[in-house]
Image 1: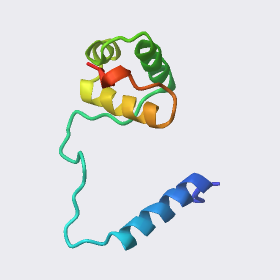
Image 2: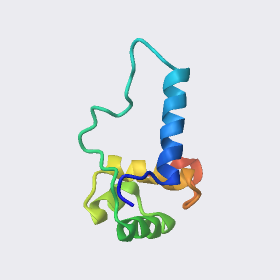
Image 3: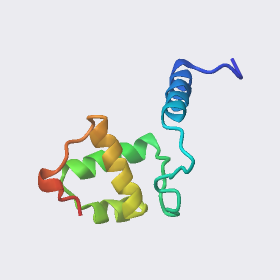
Image 4: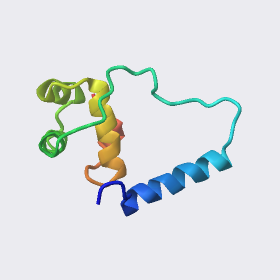
Length: 96
């Protein structure tokens, strides 16, 4: 139904509200706010291709070129995929 939040959205809202109440500050810093070349939206096909290239130890700069994305966007995706257990960190974090 339109206008009704699903469970994930409701959970995100509760977490955000809790953080705002817990960490209320006079000044707030927004991480990565000024980064213009950061892309956060990926298609499932792009994510799968990223993971395949990552698993083949392709350097991040080459992955970015192949996917026609910035290295920074690919770095963000790699952090997301590592944090969600979808890819393994590279030895010594040699990603470039």
